[in-house]
Amino acid sequence: VQLVESGGGLVQAGGSLTLSCVASGTIFSGWAMAWYRQAPGKQRERVAMISREAITEYADSVKGRFTTSRDNARNTAYLQMTGLKPEDTAVYYCNAGVQTPLGYRSLDYWGQGTQVTVSS
Image 1 (cartoon, rainbow, N blue to C red):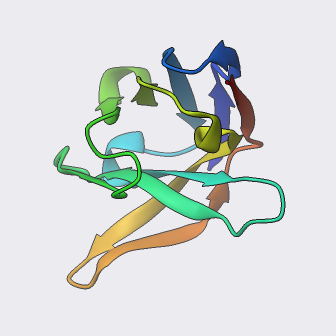
Image 2: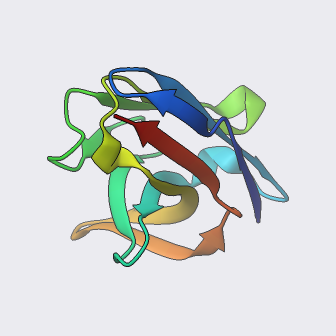
């Protein structure tokens, strides 16, 4: 499974960005997909998840501002980010995983990451 993120950049607070994650080498529709982020000096945290059935979950810190979606025909997952804040600054990664009765379980399939920087 190969994952390639794109769409990061520099944006002012209150602005918007949409990240894309293109998957190859796999049957994309069979995976749950998640977005993680890692800021300098902090642990990687999951911010959004979309199941195979397009059920979504969000971290409290981004709920109401971020929206994840998927297009199985294009093997692509998206993370639409609005109302960006300086604390959203991080490297954003997409991940392929599985949905279990206990929740999302990430597998060791990661993209290279894309930098999002929000200026105040």
